[in-house]
Image 1: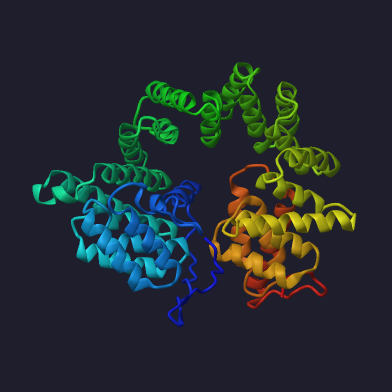
Image 2: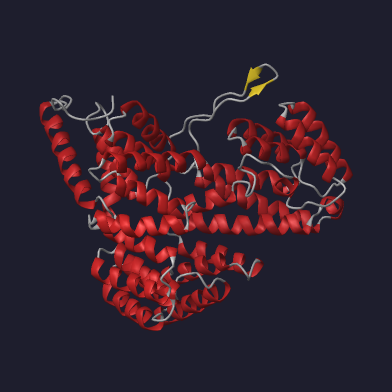
Length: 499
């Protein structure tokens, strides 16, 4: 979510500023679902009839198209009137308030969207769309319990929507199926984040039944099966393996079955079983580029850089032009501080895929480590371009903030890194960037110490793990001194930090 939303003039007034929230940290599963489910296709500058309604045909098309144009002129009541006409022509369309809420969300105006959804619930209590949209918004704003509750309500209303004769003219099978799919996916994600594996398993099973061609559904169901300790071990392993296999069939680019199982065993700290699975993957994927890269990335994230390099090089031999293989080799070199090798592979990847944001982001982070000022300048150019094109991507914004910090552009660094803090969305690298930049700010020591602790606790390798461990030790020492003295820790003289 972009925390610095420019206000949009509305009939001589301004939309109220988007609320600044500090939601509790969500598990990565919830963040992923939130990114996908909040009005998919709508959260972008260019609205379309299809992104709003799920279709680009129907009697309502022209009215909705005109409403989009009217919304662009900031005529909200005119927009509402056109959407109401569209609903009258096509009762199976989502309520006008829901469509208007999606429009507000497309310009990051969550408070206005929420107000419209509240109106929709009161005006159309038998329509599930408003409940589903409120569930998606609650999830994105860091309120998973409320989100789950809203989606459960949406499912109840969908059932009535499909069975009550008096609601038949409003019933829309396509809309109902989409709501059900989203609801079960979200309920499963919330339960998974709570480690309620029985609940997650049930929800994901319904998702698979509704959308058997979804690789993501099979992947999440497989994970829930594997983690379900109430099932016999042989059964949960066999069933999860079957679902991972189905995922591979539907999406050939998805991780090999053995790698998926290895990751799950590793999370359970059953490292011997994880190693057994990864060795199987290395053999079965010997001639598969995607598989070799996946095995390489597994080793890389677990700090086994020699093995990671071996499999990435094997992938590059299979396809000397493969961008993903070059990117992986570049990241491995960056993580081991071999910046010349990292630059070589990432430059090659950039030439082959000049718009690849991960390549450009990694290249920027390598170039800022070089002593040549021209390289540093290019690092800033890559980071600025990425952040300009994807302002809501906090990983890219954090990179720009870090590079500005390294270049002593403190005002710019503060702006960007504060945006990352406001969004409360961190990668391991960005957690280190924020902690380093704000380490000497009064009142932030405890917060940054917890951030680094959370980052290091998962045991995964990343480029700044050693530096993060050293900084965490420093912050903890300062906290201990503060506790002993009963006052604030002193800022070291001459320390480099943002204001």
